[in-house]
Image (cartoon, rainbow, N blue to C red; front, side, top):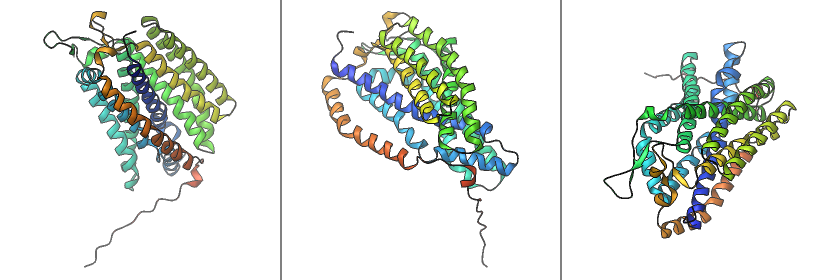
Length: 357
């Protein structure tokens, strides 16, 4: 641990920040998608369609931009810790492919839902949005928990300095990783419900706020068990501190939701996810991928790191471009900050093409 340079520690922390950005922002996107059939249910088909259009419009301007965070996290891992990237992507490629399929289906649903004029067309894309959101949330939880809990990686006996994944897709489906997946789903449902309450008005707002408290209680129970298990196995001060702060923020967020303070409730769930990621990375340090085959096979950050020159160049690039990205992201959310309600949704306009002979 003491052999790690300052730049190596900084880039490990920056990768954690990128994952915080992705999971806190994309988390409510997933939550809104999962809640589509629940909060989007009206008394008539027309009302249901309008309610679902409201839900989709709350994330419409930002959902694709939120995915940039995970791309940047992957790129930063590749450049700063190439052995981590190589071992992770070669071992988890089937799981990552499933996540990619889920994200593609979800994105297509958000883009194509409004391009047809039949109920069946919209229903099929709604399934893609909801199913893709559930699958992505579950798989991210399983995958990230596996990384922290321990994966079947080992030192390559044939290539010095190389590590290989000695398992299958089913090796990633242990009890604790599956608990991680369910916890992510519950947290994102809560985060998404509070985001809907913050961004809408009318019946949807009140229903979302009430639902967030119910899902939040489930999320709190799952998260407590998960973080206790992870930090008991990989004990660290930062890991435990992150776990405690995550629990406090979730309780504060749920209390704010009960009082009708959607803004503070959203801050609470946002901070909950952020501190949960801090807890995960605190438990992971100083490893990149702890091995379930014995500590002698642990892939450490030191073994996975790039050269000091590479890290120095990356640091200067981050100093220049990171403020630009943060300003643009903040500006986007500020522009689309107003609430939306069912009465704001215009009637659908269907254009019939005519062919002149």
